[in-house]
Image (cartoon, rainbow, N blue to C red; front, side):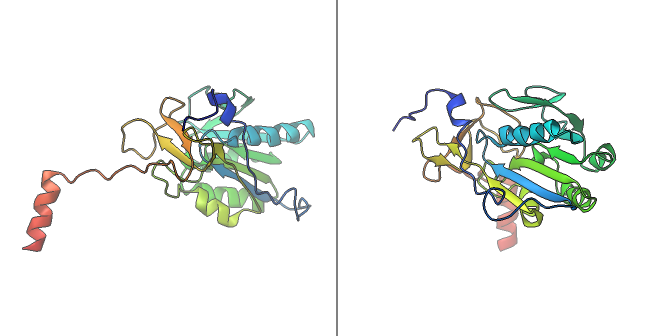
Length: 225
């Protein structure tokens, strides 16, 4: 069945959210906290991050925004969503730089958190313990459909979690997977519409494991002898 959505911009706005913010719990007072926005590509994660950070700026709060240096798809000095919403940001090579750069901030935003590794977890914990509001956005699963660190670890320590879904480009159902469209076994492969598309559980096709090399076969045979 062809997808009923004719352009990539259609599915980047569709967000299904399970959020504690608007349901049971009031916003904390006199303490820091961590918010995590996660989901597949093209599900509106960066748009939601930009929305929250923009509101904080309107409220005259001191805001610092970061993204990993590896993500230079649309701009090097801005966080940019696939629908071209943008907000100024700083590039970092590792999470520990954020502690110093965000020293005076009240609100800290981090986009593409999956590219910053497990060291991001103690960094955001320290920021929140210091009384800052920290908002992280990133992919919760990789192109294989497996958990993408450090998002699972961040979910465990966050006060607020939003799970965003895209629209499956094959059938139009809510999509939780990111389907890689190009040949590569690299876990981190920065790309856009030509490299990835959102897929639902039914339409997602996990990559097949690569066949063993001659050397690997020889080692296996020798071990069995």
